[in-house]
Length: 182
Image (tube, rainbow, N blue to C red; front, side):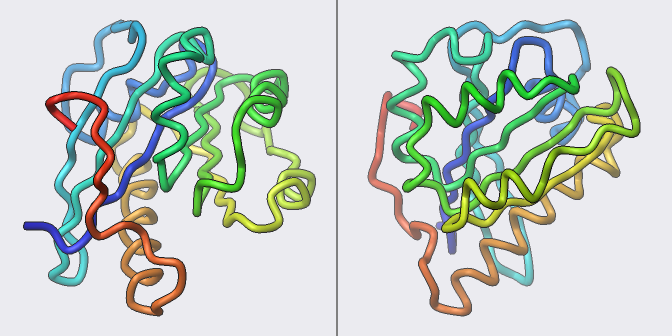
């Protein structure tokens, strides 16, 4: 039994590091694995003696599988956008295709493992577009466990604080099932 069940979806262009983020956190082999469609993970988290289940959908090929991804987007509490280049093309695609009334939190992650260590998102622009949603920005190397832990620690802290402050709670029981494993 879990105190909280959190649904999150990983979005980003192909080869941005979405699967690397999960594999680094779960201490799995960091092979050159390409996600086709959507991979599903259930991750158990603990924070302040509260047990969380993180249902995490890892999307492959950016928004190529849009018809599959739509059903996951509608139920996700948290969107995790992973980027590895300095182009805003994918973020603009996200703005055009995602209903921003749904998530409570959007994490923007720049994977420094690939390119420019000095890159910064235009955070004020993104904040203006998402005035009703909490946005958090991370600039990390997704192959370093200690840096990846920062993301999951933030998710745990955010969920714990949100529910203990009795604001818009993240579902304690998410009834959405897309398949037999969800």
